[in-house]
Length: 472
Image 1 (cartoon, rainbow, N blue to C red):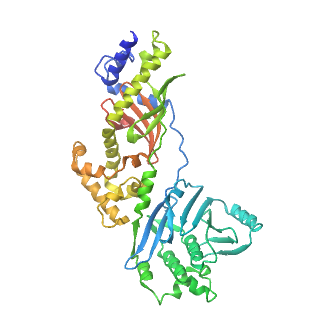
Image 2 (cartoon, helix red, strand yellow; image 1 turned 135 degrees about the horizontal axis):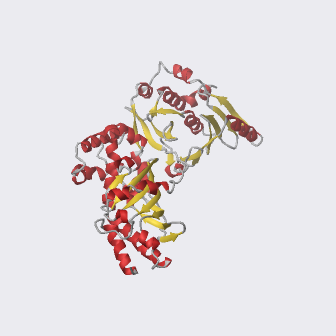
Image 3 (cartoon, rainbow, N blue to C red; image 1 turned 90 degrees about the vertical axis):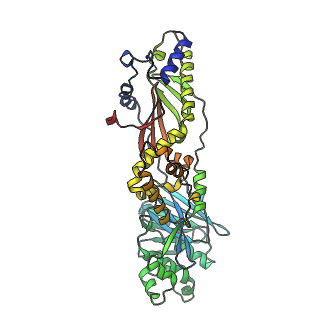
């Protein structure tokens, strides 16, 4: 069989499972798809998925708005939403500064005429105490105290405020001790650090304490009383007979969270993958595989992968190695081009495969998988984009979609409208490509999606099937 004939057979078999197969062993002559799928476990066993990268910690920025009053804070949900902090809304947050925050260290920058920096680092108590002793040899110690919530504060003149809590040391710099309001707001920011429950302050007492500290700190300093060192209970008792609208609202949960749309739009657009294109090439060592950029649209770009079941090409004695590589490269490039032509169809299948599992518990998945990162929130027809309003909107969308049969969902107006609210490039950032195997009949796509390992089969008809060995 000459090169032209072999290429014709290879291309025909790649896209037509009914044609007699000269490229694989005789037991697979009939082009039975189940025979091919039976080989998937062998394919998967040949390599392991890439090790998980260090997970970056998600941060969320919104506003806590007091009902019936003008008082408002920035609400920082940090460390994957485990903890929260509040900062006066007059400050401007630098959203991009925290995109690389991880479990071990991170930073938040903000400004109000000048730059402020809040950094954290995971350390032991022993290391923290050692660091404080070393700083005391260089800078004069001006503050050292511990709060009733086990927050340990150190401040050094000419350096920064340090706070140790929950196994982390926090360093806040950029403030001036001569600007009393600003100085107290920096301490209030650190003192507001507390655990969250379902994305909310579990204890309103903390919010009430921070409000009273910010509002009355200057007044009490003139009297020689430092409210930073007052217990929360003591401070709240001082004002229990003089409650204003804000404290009443806090006591009665009369506040709500408004999404910071500027943050989510900026973050979404900055998250788009910036993959450098690498030309495809074919490599032959112990096995045949490709290297280069093989794009699968929303499933991401794969830079390496195996070639399987092209047996007659691999074992041909008539073809030179260079001819085999050229022929296989044509097959790979053609397959990539056809996948890109079908990328919208593949995308819709992936979306449906994911969202159908969320119909019954959309609120849980909305927060766990951070849908806010890929939703076009600016397009939602909501009077005010609060957390509660968006949760209700999403639950209603899931309810509507759950009533549509899978066979007709892609052509339904409801599905098309819902998909229009999803930014595919931002959704793609939730998928980390790992490995791709190309065969004449299907592709095996291995990736990590929402931090879970996934394997998908893309058939010759570009049907997307999530791999489950029990199904085949």
